[in-house]
Length: 320
Image (cartoon, rainbow, N blue to C red):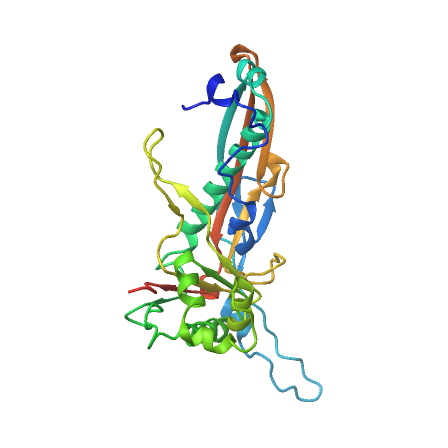
């Protein structure tokens, strides 16, 4: 395992006001903002899924004088389960390296940031693997087959495609989708498409942001999956790229406040009972006397689940 040596962290030249760290901004990680966090007491358990057909059926009947009203109800499926896997990573800060470092190097701070980022990258990749793929959601729309690719600046219709996807979700569930998740490539295609530029050119500033697209696509939030990951083996030349590299998009309805009576495309189950954190994330520090070091350790106990696939439409292959 690679570790800084004393010569790596000791600055011989008087450049203590300069340090460069590749620390991604926490707001670039969107997994828990797309799928709301549900704190749970146990590592695994069941959750309830109410029958969509029963909730959307028309069961009320005319009532004649002196007669009972029509009875009705709904079915509940209690077989779906979650299981919060525990992920962990640590960085040891040894006494010699700490004693030989000086500002702007702060080994304890840097170790905490590194450990935290490792867990955030893991969570983001789990979200991408779970939600940003075909065969997961109620409907898949594939560029070149079901829709025209967004890279086609003449015939592509990103606004109309999102409108159609919205209608598919709403007609199937009664809920209007409120969240659009875009890969970086899909975000670039959407904001630079002539149909989008034409729609906003008289009303918005020159730079088209995610917030502007949210208004145009009629959703509360547009999230762009901008987090990156190095896929190279340790010690090899870095191979850094976005976690989601394809041109794809997910339109979905997610419940802002988790409720057992409301559907949501997905949830992030977080094992609060183990870590004492509603986020399912814990960073701790403890002494490793046998190593003459302090250990900064992070744990994450989560399960990212698609709960209601009919609440989402996935658009893939948006670039030719």
